[in-house]
Picture 1 (tube, rainbow, N blue to C red):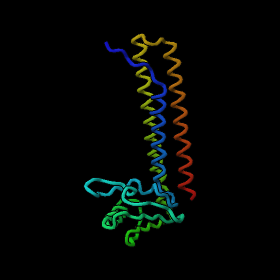
Picture 2: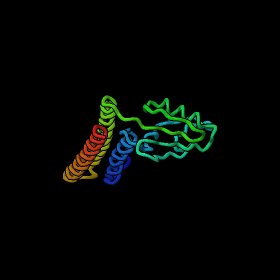
Picture 3: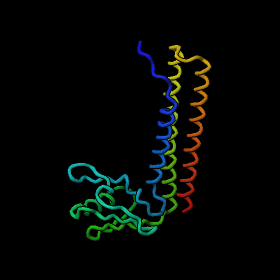
Picture 4: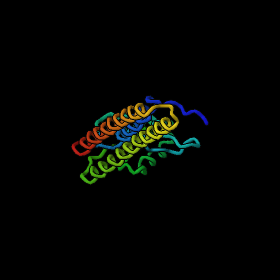
Length: 188
């Protein structure tokens, strides 16, 4: 029978922190009424035979608090980028001016704020589930190590407790990030 690899705390920690990092990245894309270039990250455009993100086709910047601009590198793609932003379901209405696309960021109404808050909750729950899945994988690995007599019962309990504490800490971090994002969405 093949030898199980030893329990790798750092790998478990890295995977759990990856779930939290993904959450923070998704939160950056949630529109809060302020111009943030991350808003356009989910927008993809079919260009040069493959799907590309807006920031690969032009320079995205926020020259004013309520305005984004995209300076498209290739003038022939300006209309395509404009249409992709318009059709992305972000509630944005870009204005094309040659190679420059101006995107005014409208004020959020109460209903849109609630929708964004629900979306933030959904992202946070996905992050919690991802963290718990990593914990489950780690616990299963510890059980197999104990069953194969690679670690003792005491060491299994100690490592399980460490794993649970790490899980609790990162779930708390997810909850704190959600609370901060919700505050930002509802009180801009």
